Length: 376
Ligand SMILES: C[S@@+](CC[C@H](N)C(=O)[O-])C[C@H]1O[C@@H](n2cnc3c(N)ncnc32)[C@H](O)[C@@H]1O
Ligand code: SF4
Figure 1 (cartoon, rainbow, N blue to C red):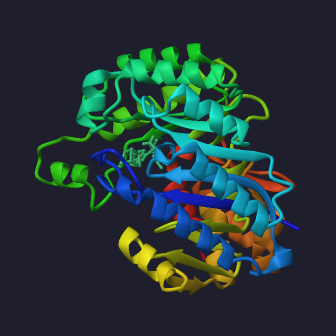
Figure 2: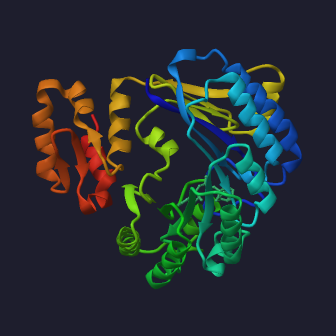
């Protein structure tokens, strides 16, 4: 049976960061008790859903800002998951915590109830840049919260950083990376800032109030990140993700390997390998549907072989281990060699071994173009 994942989306945030297009809302913390109550109800609705098909090995509390929830609510959610599903094989329970927004007591409490991995959104150690991004934390909050997390017993911590920020020099990015490495987190996600439609950043760029860095800077900072982290024993196992040995994020690996996942909370997406469905992207609608005893599902799509193939390409090429050739042969059959020859004669950064097809060293820079050439 394939591994599978559980995701809980917590939509509350203290402020909205200018670059963020995740579903998150501000000034609604008074609705947290109702949210938790109805989230538990939503979980119970899935009690009998394909009961024997799920082998859950990861749980992830993401957002929004899950560290806004009281530890008691996180405990209730974990208990409900335990009552509803078989989660005895779950080895990794991650919670996203914003720097400066998770007290030592909170961290200790969630560690005691089973959360064993933290993901902290540092983003930058440059106070001015943090402000420009709309973040409310200061660089010192990153160090304090990290220290508290260690004291609370967390030995598996991810930190998110962002490069390609306007006015972030490569020199400053290198300094920040080195500061981060001195903390010795087990995992580092380093994302290039992307301008997502429907964000404040999108409008600022469109109205020429903010100028995004040139592509060369983005590439330079990506390559320098790879090199510095490699030199410090961080293994790049996905385009933006680096970890110490055996400290990869198993939850994200579930997504990238197209393993099934069940998700709860507004805007959360679920996938059972044949179908994808998603909850309404509105806290109001989510609460009122559950209150009137309906599932808060906003839509679904059935996935055919072509969709699954293209998603295998899209996700698999980003992984260091690449894509299992047997998965591609299933679709191409006898034509597989012609298909692969056409791709490798165009792209010399592709490595085809007996079992896997993967990108060589700097092939990740062209991953989007290579993926679209490989789509059927
Ligand atoms: C679910 S989000 C936010 C989690 C948490 N609320 C926080 O802000 O730290 C997870 C991560 O995605 C990254 N991210 C979000 N939007 C991004 C964007 N437009 N470009 C690059 N990275 C982004 C940030 O590093 C962020 O920490
Ligand atoms: S980046 Fe994180 S803190 Fe900022 S709005 Fe998005 S979810 Fe909230």
